[in-house]
Length: 382
Ligand code: PMP
Ligand code: GLN
Image 1: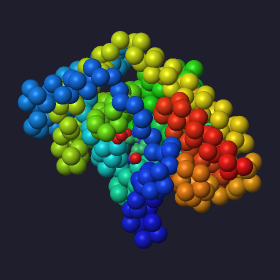
Image 2: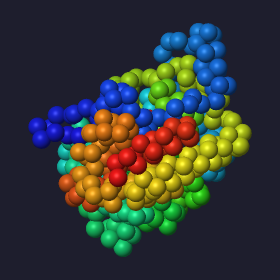
Image 3: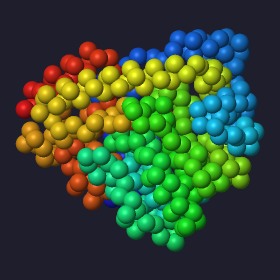
């Protein structure tokens, strides 16, 4: 993403979305659902607008949403947070990630992420002036190698930026992996920033928030967002929670990024966070079916599919089709067969890009018939 001259380029999501539009392709690139979330939530936003919730919200977020985040963390994970000092609302998870890294890191520090990594991580680490170090996740299961994980830590590791469930691979990390990360962060005195925007989108393994593990809470900032859980990615409401001193530092930076976040959406999302358990299990179940439909279609088209345990992305290898450069393919795919997908190599530095050279990431948060049609089109590649 950072060009050779240090300039920030257009994000890959934008590039593939534009190409897909130009060729009238099915866009399985950028991850956004093709159906909106619950109408009670969108109705609540409409009502908030009608009731006059149209001026700046408090910088740290509306109390009703901070209270709802605290209640959600307690209900699902048994975590107890003070809504006044331990939670802030952000303009999507993206802003929380940026504010956390800008608050905590600078030149001379290292930020460790797994690789592949979500694209904004590399860009924001670059903006902060810190050095980006990585630990590899390898196919087929994309789990970290616990035996060698410590090799990626140094005395300069200031932040370990975890993403679980993991975009782009769909991996879900078990508690023992997360516990090892906590131990190493403690040993090297690093802060853990954990991006858990897909917390409710797991297909089998239960999501374990890092902050629930022994020794973690005092050094962990947890980030989540309404976009994925409630299928309102365009509302850009996220939140960050953790120890009061770290949250205060992030809040100070957030004040000068966006200052505050969309007022009428905040109370609507507060209502969403309070929805009954069946809603949360229901979205995971619906997505699991979609995952299975697309995975089966891609397999039938001749690709090797790495079945994800979470998120709404599936990675697949096009090498069996005799294609080795998935990045070149992704740029031509909308025109060739009418499908948009993201090359996994763009989520990597050089070594990782070599390892993932023939992998594509497909989003399956789309209607079943759309997924079937997309797989049918991909089969024309073979
Ligand atoms: N983190 C990850 C891992 C993501 O996949 C995304 C995209 N949804 C984000 C952060 C950004 O979330 P938001 O749209 O809430 O800014
Ligand atoms: N998180 C979404 C994805 O991974 C895209 C968000 C964006 O366009 N920045 O597809």
